[in-house]
Image (tube, rainbow, N blue to C red; front, side, top):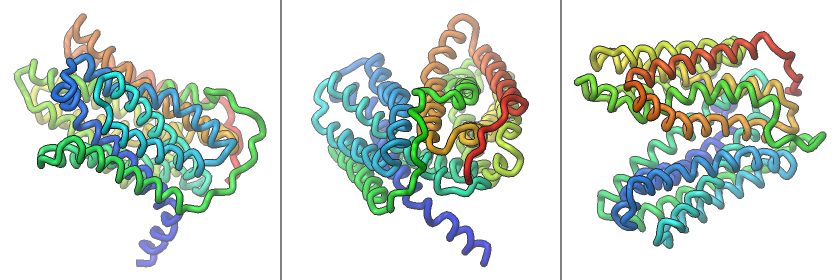
Length: 388
């Protein structure tokens, strides 16, 4: 009982930030679930336009994250996080007047900017509040709240639409979710941040090598999400969505129960083994002769990627001056978005020129390359000391 009380007391300062990212990502998830139907049914657009609309938010986030991080380091994490929540709310409201494809793409870009701002400033704020020995754990939990917000948001958006609430009800739900997120940020006192020592570069050097490792690992997730159903259908197995759902099960579970490992064992070591575990999972999916083996592969991929992000993020944090960690985390997170954006088309090209198993063989090699970069980090430059 005492241990549970201590845990609740430790996490109490972080809960408004966890809640804010959860609520704002509810708005992202709810819009994501219904936009393909909106584009094709209401705007009479084609499949290409569906892809453009969905991708616009990710492209916007890639550009926004490092800029938001630099600004947050200089002007305050609370200011930028609150601006991100407000932007998510304004974008959600703007869906109501997105009566053509051009306006809708502009709204999606605005929504991506809001998501990029709130995530980046919130992550840096959490790192500032967390003791050095628990930073990996806290950043990992932040990611779970983000993931859960997107997932539940997609479910809620679909249910609202199917219950005859219509698109207007979905957009209003998005507005309300972002408003709650903004309120949580507004009520939390702003932190005392260290004064910037110098203007940081747009892409922090400390984020480059871990970021490339993250992008290489993200290829595997993109391939699993986009092609595992087609891969198993081509083998006459079917049920590929079960393998993808298995990924989500272990992704959340491992981070919940083993999320302290980067802090305890060292982030580079955990990143190395996480990437290798992902490689084993991707190889298992590639050779799967039946659905059971494919599901096992999905479980292994989820277990590998679960700790890879917080481990590599901790590498970046440990190599960055405290006054520049917002910029570094923003740049680092953008590499994940780049991996997702490039991984799907790359997998498609591999499938066209080779076959579906070839996708997973290639992504296995990418995961091994990610592990090699983690090994370079583990044996490379000395860390920049960061005040705890």
